[in-house]
Image (cartoon, rainbow, N blue to C red; front, side, top):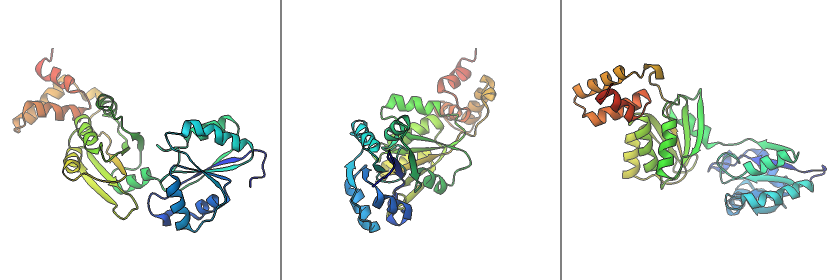
Length: 283
């Protein structure tokens, strides 16, 4: 049991799939905790068994649907000096997983928060992608609604850093198609699924090719998508003359005008309307 006047929140980096990735500190904190707030209590029990950990902690579910309401209960326990361990199905709490609300509430209440680092799907996928890792941004899950998704990808079209997303198998094909429209069909990407698990797989290629593959052979399991940043010209180079010339060059090579405009828009990081105006109505 905790002996300090107030408790402490301990964020545990959980294995993505392979229990051997759990650190000795994770096992020690699970055994030491007064309360374990778990995204999935059944997975927690399985992990405890795999790690050979026996705990007398009170186990409570803590996931997206109940996180808001359960946070206050945990804060009250922390005021009573309890040590609260937070663990998700895999990876780090708070990173597109439960935990942020409790961290914020604990900080506001002056309660200590610490972390036991562990596996991360974001950096694991980034390292496996073969794409630049020196600068990257994490974008979480893309919006589910088509219009919101298109607006977000449009805003990211000129992002030069490598981008990392989470996505559901049910939506991955639509997301890849939307990305291909916004970023260009040849933009390099890596679709990483079931990282560290038995059926781990990394599919690499252009966004359009990955979208076709996702439609023909739908990927299963948890997906982390890594997309190369924009490497096109600076915005000041996207002059009407330059865009019109690029469209003309593609048409001369046998591409139809609509496809040429779409490719040029992705190349310059502008909307297709901008390319249309430069090509059809330059004045």
